[in-house]
Length: 193
Image 1: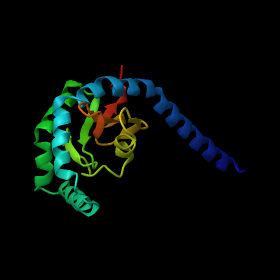
Image 2 (image 1 turned 180 degrees about the horizontal axis):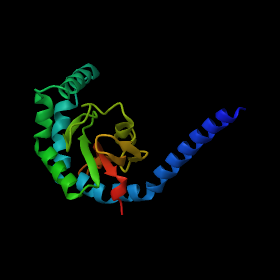
Image 3 (image 1 turned 90 degrees about the horizontal axis):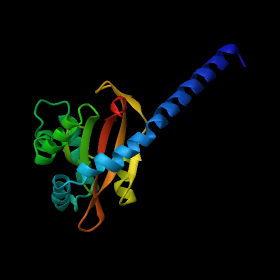
Image 4 (image 1 turned 90 degrees about the vertical axis):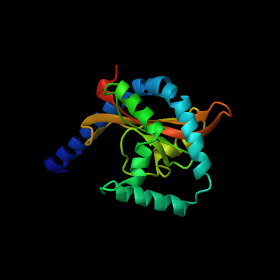
């Protein structure tokens, strides 16, 4: 092999290994956060009741309607008039999630709660899409049952200018012990203890 090819392979290997070490460095702290503080506030009455209420309204939606809603949401992210986004950002659950984020003093970069279809119920900040149901954060939590946790790799987030991991957990209705939704939390790993 040429020297330049070996240098490129070495660089790629170093970047990959550094990224893997960087991600695993925080795994224990992120899992502890998921099973402790995040689980606690994510299973509050505010979150449970908001998800249950939305599930009543969305349980019969078909995929074409979900796609239509998601398309509308995406269009609104760049628009001046944003009725769909403002309705979610202005609801009581979003207010609660904003206060949870603010109380975390920089640890959380974003929080959003999803219903049984993977649709946003409430959020601290605007998400790029309304439907999360096709993503791992939903499939690997809601789709896997009670106690499911997904801790994503640590990546640099341009919008928050932080290194973050998305931590997602299934949300369980304590009355029935069934999964009713999920939550995803952006965690600024530089703020972990």
